[in-house]
Length: 218
Image 1: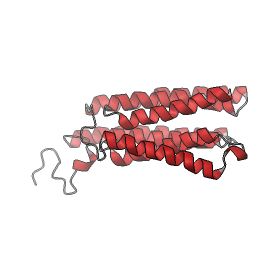
Image 2: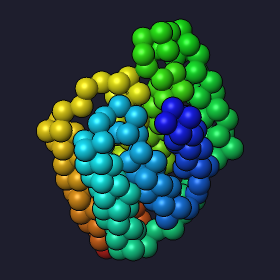
Image 3: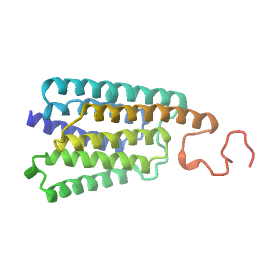
Image 4: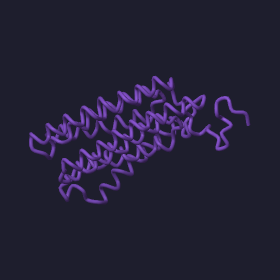
């Protein structure tokens, strides 16, 4: 199982790079669903079979099916397709991501994670996933892409806790997933109203005085 878990961590890193490099919003949502599938395998590394199956099913349903489906629905409503003018270009994003990954490995090496019973590769992948989520929130301008970034950020938090072999409390995990579900639902509503009130969902182009409001004269 240890070798299989290493493959899971590597797949998370690859999925993060794919999200950073993708300009297609629909592609980012599909990659988010893939992350959900990958994360659903993590509980088998440190939980007994009944609890692992429970968390695997829960994560698979919520993160791989429900969240992406809600985001796909919001995407159909706003009719956005691509991040055409990101704050940070895609080539620069990949280079920054590579630097963040190297820093993650360096940091975990300094912390001597392996000597404390944790997975160095897993924690490096978790830190890189957290970075990816924050980077997407900051470096992309479409509201729906920023929602994707938030969910990726939470995926990193979950992966970090699992890699540190922290004891999982079912109520705590259910609370986190419920909070995320509410967030994605509210984000879908917000994105819908942004698209209804403005000609776009570009958060950088919304002026404070409301001059971008559809039908409102300056």
